[in-house]
Image 1 (cartoon, rainbow over the protein chains, first blue to last red):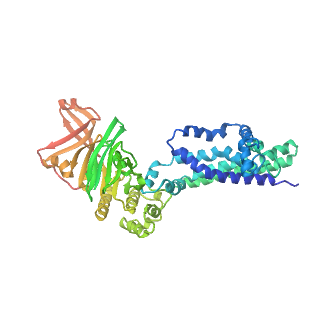
Image 2: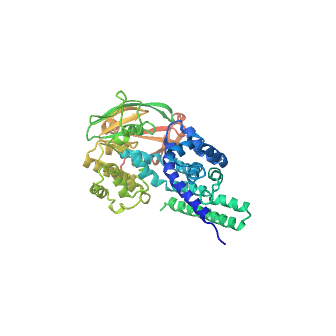
Length: 224
Length: 290
């Protein structure tokens, strides 16, 4: 029996790229939401969390419209930057980043908000800038939140279906991720393949959560 | 020299309160601010540090304006050369003792200073421990030398010893005094402990509900009653028991309980929980070593 591994490879490539981008984007965004006194926060916060409640197909549909070569944004990408978004890996990445944003931002935001303000003030009082305080004091002390955010974003991207299908189509080797491949195989009554992909995803999801749990216990457990 | 004239409206537990202070600290002075909790002591330190912005006024250190509402100057906390020692230490839990100190260094090359400071408070052996492995007294020593490590122009202590037991407290008072005498950095020490004031300060500012009501040397402020041969303690009524035509009043003074006899007239004006003064005069007390 020969299994096509390309959907799995594609899935993990997508998840890794998405998680890396989300980490870089998520930390400053969470920091801003956690500490800004600006009122516009009230608008940004629900926007970030929208993917939690919005049907993925809706998001995928809007992205499809936005990036279609006939739309201004899609046209800009194609004509000026020379890249196609719809039905490409880039499209998958953009969709996943938006769709998994709350899974990265919300845990980090919670970690930042529960971080003792007194420690931040102590760092400022030692003459340290906000940036230095963030990198040397705050982030090292909220590792569990950073880890949770990254792992959740990764796992969520692995399991994504609706957005990926809408903006990526299901082009084998290009945009056909594991979760879409499962659907395709079941539709074609090709059960062994569906078993295989499902088994792999199931195992990985469990292992990820198991490791996360164990790590967080270890990190939290600082009592002598 | 440090000049502070600042005003800020605060919301205290007892409703709105205007904090309005105006004082001078000479170079090399060790000033204590004494007052009940909620009087605004911590806010004064925070305003000097730049952690709280006054509504109006000015704060000037060595001729340099750190804050001036009229001129629109408000230096950020990072640019104010302060050494702030907090009540609950605020050591960075991700760093070892040594890393906490190195983080505070202004001049990253000056690792010698870290060793010297550790030596001074006898913590060299514990330099590689994380804060959670230290006792309260050790933590506060680290916080103390961490504040010193950046060589501040002014030292601000916010009730640094209040969570330590008496013995440790006395010891750390000595260490703080020793450090003060060595570095001669102008210092403001906030406390609500009278004995600490006597021991620590050259000048006392008495703060009541946001206003400085009295200023002077500890002796001038608190000494007169003691010199007149009277005892005077403030305590809380815990119990009132009638015994024939007399009343026995149980009063807590500090950590000690005492029973005092009161007449019916005196007892009528008292209820449990009242703050009272217990005073005695005209006899010589017995002093015993404990």
